[in-house]
Length: 152
Image 1: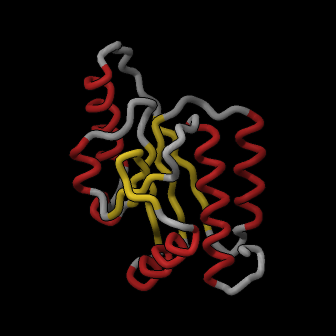
Image 2 (image 1 turned 90 degrees about the vertical axis):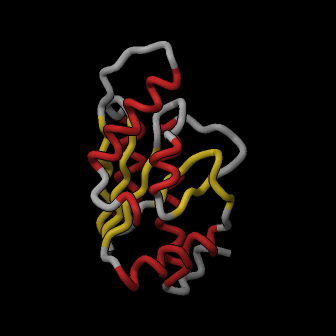
């Protein structure tokens, strides 16, 4: 299975790359790809930023109607439910695309076009940390699917 994570973010820092590489190695049977899309608009208007960043993501995500977007407006799910979702996707596709918006979130257009909108928590996480959390949850889901005792 190929997992593609699209995000609006600046260049990765060393500690972030180290953590992401850790999960990429653990997911050796799968492909975990991070696509950081740069944004050049420097507006103080958050709605302008959301629309501009979401436009970039809509152009970069291959199948937005099959994508899983992460947003505070999404529904909360457990790790087992996330594993079930990955299983569901794997029956029809060999790739799952995840979408992470900029610091102001995703536009309603992206959320409406996404197949699923999920919230990781009611807490707010920095993007750098959230990509690591998502990587661990993908890893955990793969182990749940294979009945590995990692998830208790």
